[in-house]
View (cartoon, rainbow, N blue to C red):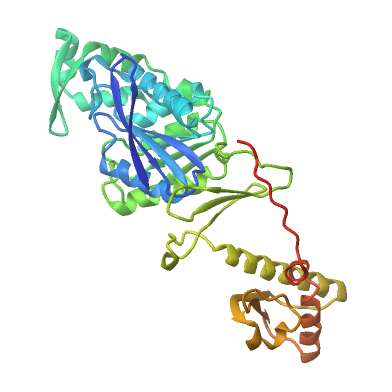
Length: 408
């Protein structure tokens, strides 16, 4: 994962500090993460989830709300409504600087903000909450007996998790006025609710209320054994694996790839990560190509010759299956192993009359296995049919490659 420090203007015009965590390889989508009440983008659980999501190809923008962490502004002047505005501005920053967020993730009160803002962010295709309250007024429980003083005098200093914060009356009034249930019902976007059954900060009943208010498609996953802040690494890792697996069903691939050059063309583009790594778009199937570390690569994908071997092996297996079905042969699972080597032509008995370059020739060793075994007669048939594989014929034939340099 690579991390960039970024910033954008918040709802009050002050600088919002953020970090954009991107996968080393292909970016499938970007998620926008809203942290919990009085927390920051650098909360250990947030960093762990961002790092884990990067391994699944999902980038994450995490930022500090106004007046928190490294962001400018006065926390006392903020409220739930201002958090929603900061969240929308973060999404707009992503849209202009990179691409609009496909996934919106919120933790605790950040989850409530995500639920409230998602309907106004067009690029968001799915929403995830972690330990979120079903009612914004729930956050007022943190203030205890200080609420009376805040309402009477207009503001008071409260202690939250060992830190002092000034809370103004407008914060309480804004929280009480928020109608989160209505926004959840109107969301109409896929929703994943993650919640720990033993969460002592935001009880599990909140997850049930959110689930009940939401429309399908909606999902709930229990973070069994986790605490509210997901302080254990395995809990954050589990949450990230669930989010990535679930989101894959709803988020479309990132549309930052350049279009294919021609209809039916396969597009190969440098990632600029490492010396050799390439991203491949094969008719919507996204892959990586690379070289081993011993050759100066980062070993994140098959080598170009590996792809040739893959093509030969796959084509052989498919051809044999078609033959077996045509002849009514009851063959169990077919597998094909392929090795590629450059050998001296004089050492290759099978290479007579083949084109030779610098005294060496490309040799593919192909080994066919059929689970459960086959008779010798069928084995001889399969050897004959394997040579009819179209990729086999292409590799043995003389090909013509026509190359053009296109204008930029």
